[in-house]
Image 1 (cartoon, each protein chain N blue to C red):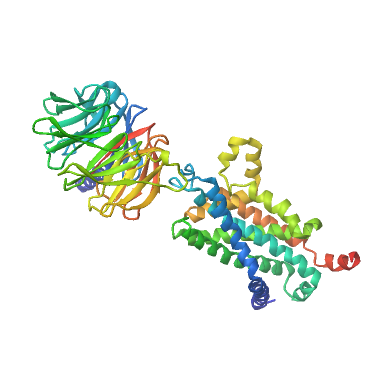
Image 2: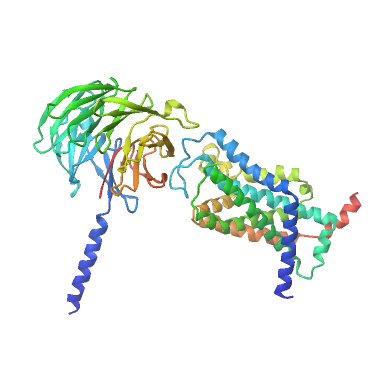
Length: 323
Length: 267
């Protein structure tokens, strides 16, 4: 009888262990280490470091959260990682030097910017085929698919434009000129507005998707920091539509913008050269990748305070989170 | 000797210290203005808007203002400790000490009462400073304002004891300028109050070791950690040890007779 009693206890403890391993997780690509850091979002500890292709930069999750796509820029491929086993299961033909990409809501078409070739490559994530290559401006980087799947917007860092690509025809239909060196674009959840950062211009443009015209241009100013150091890169919009967070690169700050009035509310001090950001699955925190200091800062979204910074690998670049 | 008598003596000392404090409003203001000037002017001049590297107890990047705030709290305690113990010299010379010493309680108790009284008055100033610093953007956790209290009391006792010991032993320090030059400035600058010690070490190894042996460094670190709800055991042990040592030394070396005899002879 003793053993019978033991079994349920074992089961319960096994379940408890399984429960703890399913804590929310962040994956961070470390550009100079050729690794991914796995960050436990309950304990705020790096639990694992996984070797991946050379110079990993942009990373994105499949819509079901089972796969992770990794731009291995110097390996000239987009790697596919199965998150259950944390093994690379495929290398997609991304074209040369993939840097950033965006996955279509259909979970199949992956739009990849090829920095050196002035191209956007469209790859089918199931058949691993290249569906199209679209010529865009020089040094394409930022990439976003509209929530309804109709538009892909790509930024070209040297041409200083947002390129509007029709996802039905895979043709470039329009361009919007923004300030110097646009790095990142982000659609508002309803798809009506698009936010675009200009790194050298030091501004963020808010673009009306319908007319593809700039309706507001934001600039930033931090006391004690030279304006040249204020270089907006990553943008994240809170789900409730209240805030926009703008990573200001070597200014080591994240700007908090009221997403309705476009007023800059605060500047939060994070690590050195902050580029990209991601919310935790519960939207309670925002994680930032700080390239030069090699860490991830955690912003409490409700309090608008930086609560901690956690060391990861060298030159962290992209970050995604899974529940 | 009953506890009531001890308490009575303690009350008397605290009351006298408190009245002196009320009367010298300019002293209260200057004790506040001094650290505030450091916070507002000195820290602004440093322009560490890009953040100070992470060191415990901080968990993320901080501004320079945030870094020096605990050191400035200790600066208030340092100045008060020194000033108040110098006032003992004044008391001795004016004879009001004699009145106090007529009390039947042991002299050591009177001295400890005096140290506690100095500490209590200093705490008011430290909290006033922390309140203004909060407005200036130094925002430690709210609970830290409570956890820092025992650390502040201990540090106040330490600095008061050092002040008493010095004023009892060293004749040359009986004016404030001497204390400023030879005690306050070296103690303050050769500590972790203004710069993290790793930064000191980058410029000079021996400077780093001087800072490391300065009890004020450990006092500042004790307050810094306590303000962030943490205990720095090393700093606690050193501060506690130094407080005990200097209190004993102050009691042993305190001689109320000395000046009453020598001063008239000198004049």
